[in-house]
Length: 220
Image: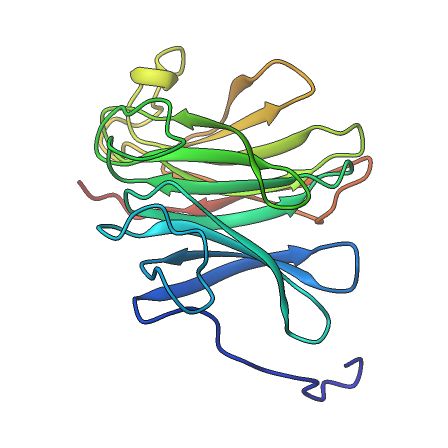
């Protein structure tokens, strides 16, 4: 509560490996949780595959009960950031590690930045992969007041979806990117150089969003 007292707590998941790392308000007093799940039982009711982990999203009400849940992918996906757009739809910023995966329209190599759009009840609407031949990741996504969302992350090579961009330091090999999704056409713009990822606040945003660089340690 407002004084820091615990109101409720519970575990979510099944018999497999499950873990959550991001959440946002659902607009009804609860939270929408972005997670990764390797379970096909327990609270995980829409697992697509039993071979790999999927991106798992659930709406949890103010009492800790699951309103709905859904899984996307199925080829080692991890949700890094989640937001609720002004129209009530849900956006995920994530990574995808393999080509053979549901809702993944492209695979560029290593692992790619992956962005998913779902409706207010968690049903899949669309997805977009932004990747290169090396390591890329979607790390942030935030709603804007005009109905679009701004997302970002880092990329590791100027090929694939990032072929128009230039890596500022080939030795470090990581640069940040920003992208705006719907209702406008998708457009990737160069943002930072010198081994940085990006993060943004506040969430949700109104007229302004603050973009900050985050240092990323280089590795293959």
